[in-house]
Length: 148
Length: 148
DNA sequence: TGAAATACGCAAAAATATTGCGTTGTATGC
DNA sequence: GCATACAACGCAATATTTTTGCGTATTTCA
Image 1 (spheres, each protein chain N blue to C red):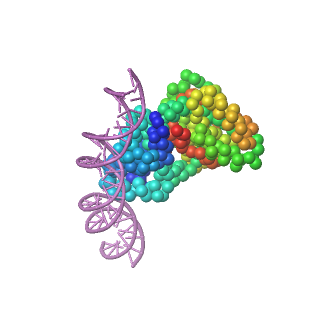
Image 2: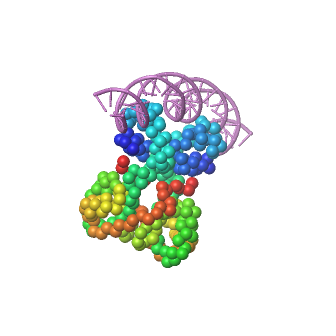
Image 3: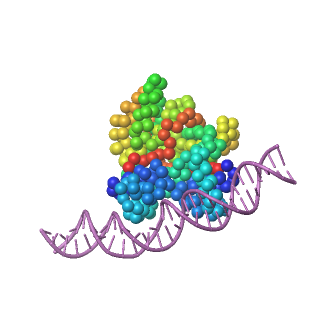
C-alpha cells in the first residue's frame, strides 16, 4: 500500500467503473502495472467490491428515515438481526455500544408507505422495546468516501 | 423503467464493474441494447455513479462512530455544514427533522485517534451545543442496496 | 556491493465496448 | 382491423480495453 495504491483507491472511489487505462494515466502508470495493482487490491480485500450508486428518488423511494432501536429482550438479538437482514427496505443497520442498541436506515415510497412500514414491520421486529423514527431532511454527505 | 432496467440496476448494485456483456446475459438481452440501457440509466440519473467499496480496516480506519449533533445556534447552520463537508474523516452527514439536528458518521484509526478528533475537531464545529458519540459495534447491513 | 525480489513498460492476444443498420414488435390513430 | 410511426431488438464491424508473457530497471536486504 504505497502512494500509487492510494491514488488508485481514490480514483476508484470517485468512479468505480473508470477503465484501468484511465486510472493508469491519472496516477501516472502504464496500463499493465496499474491493472495488476487493482487486481491485487481486490484480492487483498482493500477493494471489497464495486457498486452502482442508485438515486433513491429515481426508483420511487423518495422517503428516507433513520430509526433508533432499543431492545427489551437481549435473547431476541439474533432474531432481530435476522429480520433486519431480510427486509429490503431496511438498507443499513448497525449495532451500537450504549443507547440505542441499533441504528437502521429505512427507505420508503412516501410518508404513508413509511407509516405502513413502521406499523406493520418495524414495531413487529423481534425484541423491540422502543423505536424512534427520525426523518432525513437533507443529505450533506452520502456514500462514504474514505480518505486514503 | 421496465423489468429489464430494474434487473440491470439490481446486477450493477451487486457488482458495479460487471461488464455490459455479463449484465446482458444475466438479464437476457444481447449486448448492444443492454449497453444502451445502461447508458440511458446513467444519463437519466437513475444510476448516479459507481463506487469502489473500500474496507475501512484495510486502509487503517478500524474505528467507526456515529455522532448525534444538536446545534445551539441555527445561525451557524451553513458554517457547520461547510465544516462537516470539508472534514474527510466525517464520511456521512445528514440533517434530520427533530432531535438531534444531525447525524454524522466518522472514521478514525483507533480510539485514541478518535478522542483527538472528538476534542479537536467535532466539539469545535461551528454552533455545536451537544454531541453524543456512539461507537459502532458491528455492521449488520452496510452500503445500501435499494430494492428495485 | 551484489544477489534476489519486486515492480515497471512494451507488446500481443483476447475480451469488451460502442456504433450503424436492418428487422421486429408494439402502440396509436384512422 | 389495418396501416403507419415509434421504440427496442439483434447482428455485425470497429474501436477500445483487458489481460498476460517477457525482458528490463529499480529497490531491498544481507
